[in-house]
Image 1 (cartoon, rainbow, N blue to C red):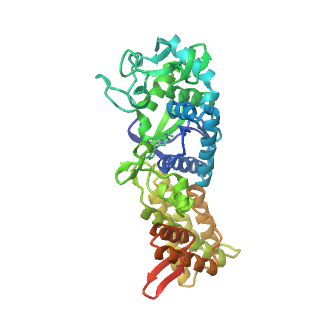
Image 2: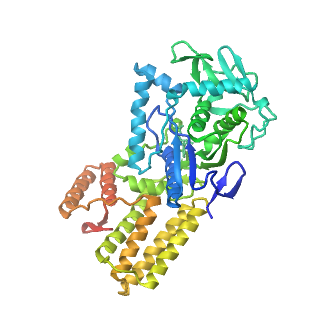
Image 3: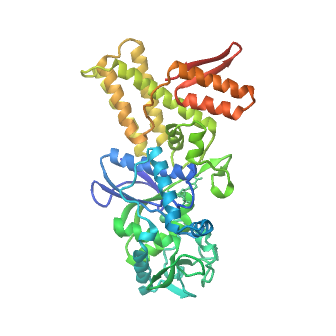
Length: 464
Ligand code: AMP
Ligand code: ZN
């Protein structure tokens, strides 16, 4: 039985989609003002594991992810560079898609951009206006929290006192009646991009785009909405107020939030400067598979500390799996698996599903994969792994990888190339360029070559 921890109820709940066999999922996508860092990608990899697993469980998935392509930083950066926001964001949207593909993130069915949905946002704000949830001030339109009694039900915050509400509300649009209210439409400001609409000239607030786009493509009530935990409040709380305020219907049935990727105990964030982009890590010789493996190795509700050591361990784990696959490929032959081995494989698949059904417990699922590999090896060493068994083993690990997507067959290096890289590393060490030396070592490891520095010189071995 598939269960998810639902932020709305604070409990693990059995999952049943609104329409049998079909799951409608919305995820808050990137703000394309710069390259995404791998903290952002932890959240996107989690969402990918979710949608891949739903498909693995034979659901049809309709996944929509927005692209926030109008926002304070975007407007500022585009202006500084003298380009239109369209040109500015096109570059980082393309980079995001490319990085996502590199990490084997399956692209959503729809990737709607905020600036293509201004009329939908204006219509939604007008609906809210008709129901008395808004007020206008100096050209901007605000949502009045006191008109929506359910406000606070997702974040379980107490709104009886005054509270300033984070990201959007801490910007320059401070002319609201109540510190908790938030902006729906920002009146035009000199030198900023704007749209001429029924609401007057201006641009949308951040929250309204997600309500407008999710309901446009998924309906007024849909199954799953995801994002990082930092979006619970105020962003998702505000989405509920806007959507339910307009429709009078429940907005989202299951809210799934992923925890932060940390660096030395602190959230990885652009503003802290403690971040790595995917490109940084690839440049340092790490593979996309190892990065993905590390990001999904811990359940999404637990914080994960990012270290290069963790990445190395991830690479070593993948190398073990690749090595196993290579051996099974050699031994595989047509024919049925033995009863005993078929039982072993069936049991492993059941345990894998049991782990993933439990709120996507990826660490338990990975443990099942490695237990299975160990058990299969043990049988092989006793000389009992028949061709049919090896084929069944191969198929099972490939089946798990439909969800995990951490195996990417890379061509192995020939010995001469390994030797050449070792010499390059030695040269780097002689000129005391240890960063370069480490980079070469990591690159070799990611290609399945492990170095060992001994008194007699550098030894190396293939680890897959
Ligand atoms: P943004 O592009 O800033 O809108 O963020 C995109 C997604 O990344 C959001 O769902 C954030 O919650 C998430 N996010 C931001 N920082 C981290 C982090 N350090 N770890 C995990 N997710 C994050
Ligand atoms: Zn959103």
